[in-house]
Length: 619
Image (cartoon, rainbow, N blue to C red; front, side):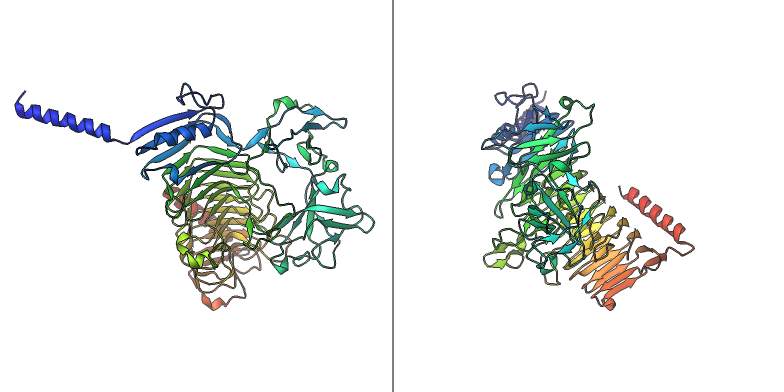
């Protein structure tokens, strides 16, 4: 070997040594429901809890850059409170954390119920333990992964109030025989439908002589005058929940808060010991928490199933306003309240949720919150959720000093987040004004290639300002989504609902169909561009099977509507203008078809096929 070759060989060896020595460290930890937190966290000796794995992973990243992976093995990983990762946990901002599920890895905030006993009337009953850390209230019960029916009357449909009380807020009159008298009226909950929201208020009393039902607080949100009982309907719809006498079908249940007992009806041949019966306990499951000065970065959650979060309504009830925002009671002066999510981010940057499932949840699903930027949610499923599926950003109420945050500190807006290839369905199971995907005062959001369907209210909601006042909302893009079978309980919404000034925003290439009309006063549409909607481009969408106009404007201003396929039922116009100057809406090359047109069916099939082919090519 020549001297030169020897030197080159030595130099290469030294380079390889220093490369290995200086490479970022990588560590892995395993968690199994059958593990032990005294183990070392290896695949052969896994930890038992995510709490312990979190501690080990963060310790491995405490003094050096690198990556740590937490592997959740199949099974139910129970948390009693939200697992929190903070920016301060990562001294090196280039470090990466992965939390990955193997198979059916479930992060559950629920408690498994046992010790069921037969009652004399053929129901099953279990006594909840007491104590400081015990279950305080039960709003959901899940049997083998399916939501059981909170006892209600009627089983399907609604009752109509006979007449609103004089003040149209505190009570109403019911008719003879409208419902069976609850065994314990104060355990019962009134659920009343407004046009685009619902109220859930505990019952105070039921006077069978005067035929008056009185809840514990006002029906309808106090903060808005038009939530009076009969504003939208003279005889609005309602039903009652949670009484023993309402149980008359299998998988229906009742919670007695005084005796702390749950009663459940099962098929006669069903062995209850073969069932996994879970009640949610933890309000949150996971949080990624940064600050404006130090965002939390580079966390990826993959193939994790989030289940069994809990949320209990305030004692005075939950009077919905819109999209799970509700009337604060008592009013603290901080603005509207909102149903919380099982998983939240605050000031998160470059974080990813992929191939996850959010289901069997008592609040909302995932909230990409304040100051969160450059994050992505992809290829995930959202279903059987009491509130919203996903939320991005925040509303207008929070203040910085004495001023609204969006005026004083617009840089705190969520920005450049992507929702891609997700399925969102069966949200709003309890809070009917919920939406599939909600995007508040956010910027540069991309919502693309998702399927959003079977919802009580709106599919995708963008913006949160009922005027054209400037806010951080801009350049939001809703593209190539399939939105269908929405507005199934409420009114005054649409497949896509939009608000406020949003320069550079576009609704493009969406496939929207099957929007029903409900009994409220307002109509529902394929797209509803509501108050203040300005500087939005609506293009290349296909909208059909809409009971009313495919596109509606309400107090909107200048917008461009171009190259859309709009299929109308007989006698229904393609556009409806409520308090909107139609000359401000520029319309170019839209194809409009009435159901009576000879080429209606052929044009519809061609448009659907064209959308499907284009969508497949883009995938």
